[in-house]
Image 1: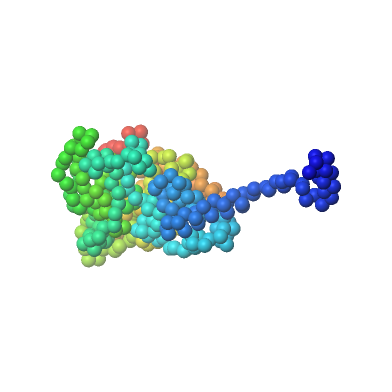
Image 2 (image 1 turned 90 degrees about the vertical axis):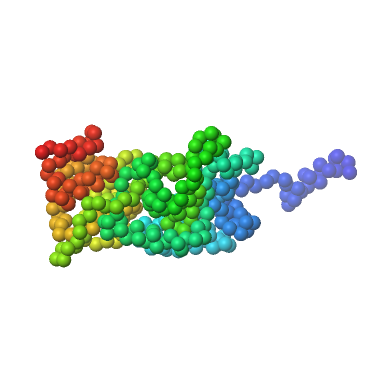
Length: 382
């Protein structure tokens, strides 16, 4: 065909059949959301399981994305018609106790692993020797958990009754057979192996730790000690527990709570605890903490409870407020109706000091002492 004939044909295209101009397609946030969710669907189709946090980078990214979607009701509604694997059918679970929260840990967010920056994951070329003391201890299913389950139930009961108590963790006091609490999880130190030298030439010991949720790990003793020093407690017998006699009247529970708020104004305050008195179980008392300005509009975790007899709750609260008045949290909290609230039962003090103050109140000796917020210690003023 001659060039002139070709040009005539193009110019004679009344219907625009030869028009090659492409129409732009706008990409909306909804489109991007659907595309990102379809990637999660593809992963599930390929692996027959939903993505988990902590695995390779891509899977961790998909798991984080799924977690974010599940926390957004509008996104869940929008994506429901694309949910071929029922990933968004999240049950409305009643989480009434600390145990419920940790047993509901579907994504294993509460697992204890070595978080050192020197333990690089997701690099298949690097292989670690299990004798290396820096080897990361993974948690596995405890196949003989039935042997230990009653021990956890007993410790929980004794904590509630006050015959055992949470105390400041001291690494040098770690013994085989001890119980600890790490980030709200009850741990039984079932075994401490003989010492050995790993590749780093440091002496260390492997352990067998049983966790309340039915898992176990062989975490290094030093690694466990470090984590407990940062965010844990030891469990000890309450030697100050007074025997209950006939005619004693149970009046309720003294409780110590820690906020799980992600508000930087609260989360960045060290040694912030709520001390109060409840005539009902503490678990029932804190059910709706995230909707109550008294609890800083956020979930809380129970640090300690004390079963009380013959105690006047109003008198206790007046005494504890007066004792820690100089370290009382000074912050305004806005409730869901937009009203400002000034919480009065939150204090900044180490848990060991709070424990001592409560004991002094129970013994009637608190009037002889005062709290020095600068040194974070109790002073005898008698």
